[in-house]
Amino acid sequence: MKILIVDDEMDTVTTVKAFLFELAAEIDVAYNGKDGLNKLKQSPFDLLILDFMMSGMSGLDVCKIMKDNPKLRDIPVLLISALPITSPELDELLEEFNQTQMIRGVLEKPFSKKELLDEISRIVPAAA
Image (cartoon, rainbow, N blue to C red):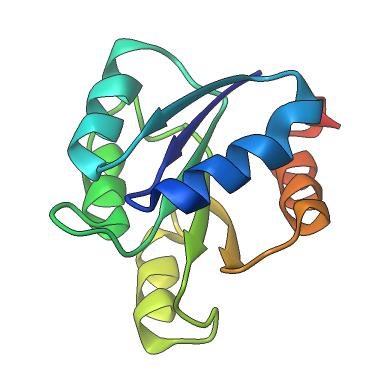
């Protein structure tokens, strides 16, 4: 399994990578939306773990570009956010992408290793 983590917080990326260690997955990282999109275009990924709030290009911007690209729209997205899962901003985003089923899950920061691994195994059953 190949996973891309896109988050502008180095601490979050380090934590998520440590949580994913036991999956024996190939992990790649990007620290902003633009670099994340470039990596998605260069190589196929089984899962994108994407921060909702990033400076510059947000997770929402990344999702909009992915949705309009036939090669990217089928990559499942696990959204991570410091915003509460029930926030209007997240509700709006999820509603917009509900039809494409691109966003397969949302985790509110901080989350536990178990929460992350459970969510990944739900989204990508081969990861279990």
